[in-house]
Image 1 (cartoon, one colour):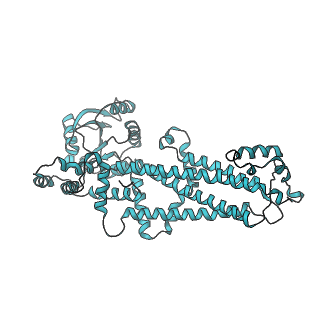
Image 2: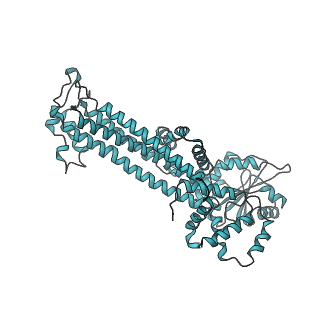
Length: 488
């Protein structure tokens, strides 16, 4: 089974969105036929979706997802190139030696050890799960600030260098992220972190290679100097601590007390150091660059790639519409010889857009903010819009005795999904949108949440609700067609 990558996720989302506007009967007939051809079995649901996608995307030229993947690869190559150039420049600056002042080991350690440790801490903070942003005070603001400094965030600016077709495909992939932030948020976060770690790995590879070339093909003198009141014993303890990963095997790469005392210098005192006697520092500095610069970044890159792959797999399996696609593909197992007449009979009842979420048999109906509906009217609207019956009716919102906390607890404990009936003629308030966020947190991922705007005498208002609900980025929240329910 192929691994879900950016190309497959984008192509699947694009195909499902196109199918959402197609005739439901035609979709069912097409996918039943493909289900037979692909020999779909219920136990291979994800494999079936991969095979279905391969059949539909097999056309001339690269697909939109393949162009997006190529664009992402090119952007990462540009980040790698930038890392190589900056890494080489940093090494040339820190290992510069013109014969007057030696290479300052303190500056090399400060840049390639202390600074890299701080940057790794920043990367770890950026990698914290989304749930931590809501629970840890100040973390969201800190992540936003650190994100601005991450090389992975340079990709939108670098995308201007891409060919138009690839840039357009990448922008469409970004649009999917904005529409389904809960599903694609992790994909985007780990994609940025992969890009930043590619930059970091390239940076350290170039810096290490440049330093090794300078050590090999030029005569460098090493020393140490700082205005802080430190002695040779302090630097000896620091050096021994940093050299612990390799000291059992490479004793000659650990500076001893004699070397440290002999290579301390002061620029005001001439800054002269015996070059050959100071050569013992180069092994220590290069190993510090490998151990505390390059190696952690390789580990971070591997972790980011692994987490991005998991996020892509999760998004591929949970895209809105995948559950219904699987049902259609597997439907041939229980279909009868009367299939053609069934398709023809359902064509007239097909809506212009296919439901995104599986249809439940019963729901928990919530009449919000004083919506005046009697039980029979409420039941008929829910039945017409969703084809479900009402298991229980709750009144909540402004003027209701049931508070938000009690409402959330009642809906979470019920086996049926919640359905909110709201006034279409009144725009959604922040209070209700916040409640949807709290409810999603309590329900967990994958459980459906329906919203049914009930039109007023003048009709309209559903467009405003659709735009505001899209900002929640909840792929398991669906707004139903209140006008269709009114007509029914």
